[in-house]
Image 1 (tube, rainbow, N blue to C red):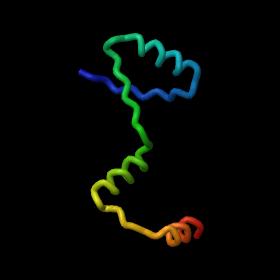
Image 2 (cartoon, helix red, strand yellow):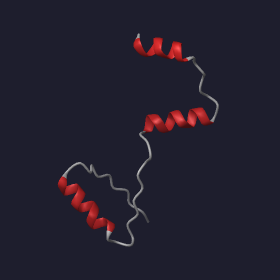
Image 3 (cartoon, rainbow, N blue to C red):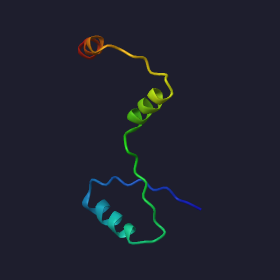
Image 4 (tube, one colour):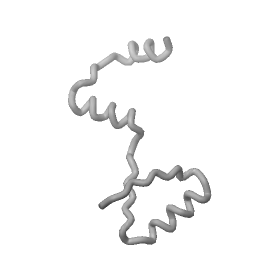
Length: 64
């Protein structure tokens, strides 16, 4: 049976807990490579669901 724990690793206490957990054989760390929006964008491109756009049009959308 597995348990998922989310720890905000920005505090000193959290970093200390993470270091302690790393010493146990039964603890496994999984960190996402990217945030959810980026992961979804990558999946979209890989499945050919993304639409191509020119750099000029992209800049217009970005700055409008």
